[in-house]
Length: 529
Image (cartoon, helix red, strand yellow):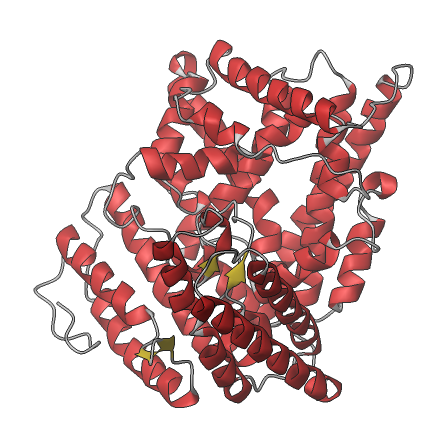
């Protein structure tokens, strides 16, 4: 058990139960200590945590999983990756010192991932989860979190010592957005206690004060913000469990960019005599077409026996169709409004999240959301791969021009992944990476005048490995499917495969491939040596 946050002597290692006990203790230790209800990211607290982490690493290394069943060995690698994530935070990333947006804790929109993308301080105020006007109980719950914001932001002024220009600049913008989000909350407090309104005002003032302080320091922040190739390679291997190097990923993403652009050209040639797709143009049309897309999508999955369609899937998808916007349209809206069913395939994210609510992960470790976004090659990789797989399965045969949209999507993912790789290697600034992604995304649908491209690149800069996870995860899952088909031969059934795939939980694609095939890929074997 955990005593005073310390890792004391464990029972004789070698049992899976020892790993589960370690994991539960570790998750307590990994969280920063609270001081007056606020996580302490001060220099002394972080130095103490980093020092004590060495004891935890030794304790985990003393557990030998080699004789365990493969799923349990996979869990061991998951836990080891989490420890490596905290180690990397202390040695390299230092989000509490280098990334101002780390201190943003107010959000109006739900993340489509198991945990919010990128490093953030704990204690987020997820305003999208509440019903307005607020009940007295909910108002008190919100107020308790709002009251911590000024104290956390006061700490940020002391902790933030980094020199990365882009992280500082775009972190400042993120704090400006938090101020706007808090002001929006202030407009929804009709009937709420006066104390909540007062505390929201204080949080706004604290956010504005930190923003002004960040702006006053901006001119002195002149260093690049990337972690460098050597650190990136270490992070891929030990935290993200991606069995490739930075250089290999550049080659793979360049290939995906060229492949998607070339196949798009062929699709456009084949479809040249067909009418152009007309975007959704009204709220009524949006409601009809998006709801019809969900209906058609669920029917396709069921009728073609692609996976077991559960009762919770349709409402999970239908709840995410959004509302009509007259524009200007950002990249994904350009795709979505031409054929709403295309992005419903990427909406596998919402099936994953519904699965987390209605189903049970197979092991105690997988029943917790994994730290450091190490699930992203599975979640983002599968959602991205699903677009092209459903196209190949015939989902868009009646609408051939929708095949073009799929290749536009692949090209955009490859272009922004290369932007991430070049930023992290300090070969491009965030602005240059954004311009590169725009220039290499077909049809001019990703524009520098919009908000999307910079926000994506900012995420990939503060969360190494995220930008490439969409396509490298897709590739790893394609390899997994191919291997299972070869193993099973005539007995292979897509529905059984996908049910097995979903039941394994949201774990890195490289480990999923090992578990479901029963063998390590050569790349994974080398990585885990």
